[in-house]
Amino acid sequence: MYLVANISVEICAATSCRLCTQFCPEANTILYNNEAGKEKGYKYGSAYVAVDRCKGCAQCVWVCDNMAKHHAIKMVMIDQLPNAAITDNVTYGEKSTTAQLASPVIG
Amino acid sequence: MSLDYVKFSTGFEKFMPKEYRDMVEHGPFGRKVSVSQMGTFKEILEEHPMCAGCAMTLFIRLAMISFPNPEDTITVGTAGCGRLAISQAAIPFVYGNYGDQNGVASGLSRGLRLRFGDKPKDVVVMVGDGGMADIGFSGTLHSWFRKEKFATIMLDNEVYGNTGGQESGMTNKGAVLKMAPLGKKFEKMDMVSMAKVAGCAYVATVVPNNPRRVESVIKKAVLIAREVGPTYIQAYTSCNIEYAIPTDKVMEDAKNVENDRYQFSEYITDEAKQYLSERYGYKEFLPKPAAAAAIPQA
Ligand SMILES: Cc1ncc(C[n+]2csc(CCOP(=O)(O)OP(=O)(O)O)c2C)c(N)n1
Ligand code: SF4
Ligand code: SF4
Ligand code: SF4
Image (spheres, rainbow over the protein chains, first blue to last red):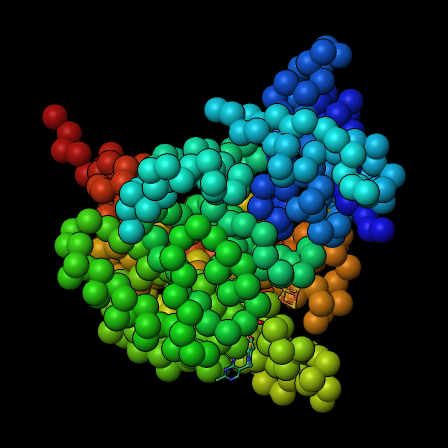
């Protein structure tokens, strides 16, 4: 098993910083959903990780901890994530994306 | 080389992979995207085998987002780590022999001008420090002296990363590497000064821990190369493998190196400033109003 980044919607959706994706070396890996967290009253939407593209470098953790100072990202073993986004389940919209969450481990 | 090549052939849409469909429908072609919109549109860069956490990868990702007209852009590369990602993007990539990139790009950009006249087709060279400052050195310098109009970007990881850690001319004096155990004996080459002497119209040094700045220098370098002259960007893109930088400290390293010896610098000729302001509305380069003292008093 291996580590992937996991973003806490509760923490992330309380801000609108959008920093981490600008520093992830991998394209289309940290995406934004403007509606995430709205049902719980959060204002801004949240970043999330398409875990099939994540290489586990933890650069986003450093950025969220040290630049954004929000501490929203943790590295988690992929089989410990009950639900996650993968590229096949991501839908692009006008200014946002949505993802259907599913178990990232098949089999 | 136009918007036509990023659409579905009739009847084939349903057979195309999701990534391709996303690219056609939500990619950057034919519209303006910027780093501030990252994470909301499909990028032209796809998955590739470069190492986890590599700063060069991040820089290439940012560069691909910053090209002013991706549908009219061709990248040119050579042996080295960068080509592993640059070749995995939805724009044409030309790969020659090790070090011949600026010769290939010279012919390409001249040919495109003959074929397409005034319609800009952008040629962007992206190559490692070994490929550019060592093996491709004479070709690079000669293209600048000849005033070939295309952008040259050095992915400066200060080592031959792809072949396991030999020193390059851009390695710092004293650096000990896996395949340079005695330490580098001479100073890092000053390619920035050479670019200026050789007549580049725009020269910048940049580090990828400031994505908006990367975007700004790439846009300027590509636009100026359309009509004014050759342009050169030298980007610090650390090799976390050969310099043993933990992947979660790559941006901290970039910040430290930037403060220490890789400060942002930008050189731009007056002709290039005028071109950017007149042609592309760059306000920062508009001619300053005449000084008050120069206005005759009534
Ligand atoms: C003519 C020739 N000589 C040697 C090589 C082997 N080679 C492949 S990549 C490379 C080093 C690349 O170093 P650099 O240009 O600094 O790029 P990096 O991998 O560090 O990004 C070498 C020597 C080659 N491909 N062709
Ligand atoms: S840096 Fe942290 S708080 Fe900011 S968008 Fe990313 S996960 Fe959310
Ligand atoms: S761990 Fe690395 S690859 Fe994965 S999302 Fe974070 S920055 Fe991107
Ligand atoms: S060897 Fe170094 S430069 Fe090459 S992909 Fe790996 S980290 Fe990046």
